[in-house]
Image (cartoon, rainbow, N blue to C red; front, side, top):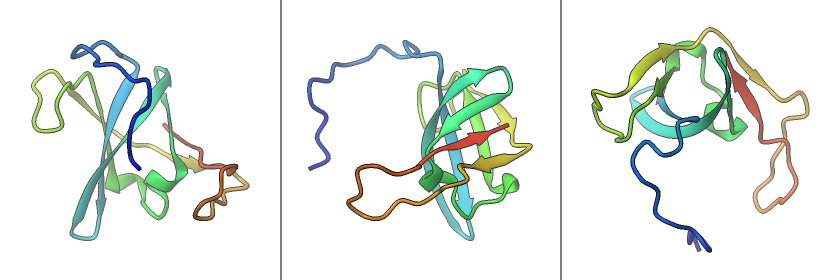
Length: 102
């Protein structure tokens, strides 16, 4: 349904470990999110970065808006690593939908 159950409104900047991923595939543009593991690693979903090279992903840290947020700091991607057993079929509840960006 796309609904969030038992959620609550977050204050801007409340979750500082959350990052914005700007994605480019051909002429299409999209976004996804990730979580900071440490200074050089971001955890995200495999389906967000599947088929994208490092030049097609930008990491924005500290932004509270999707559009040109002056608080956000842009980082370029060095490497994208997908889970070895990457497989996720539609409707499957258990899958390896994991990727790490450095």
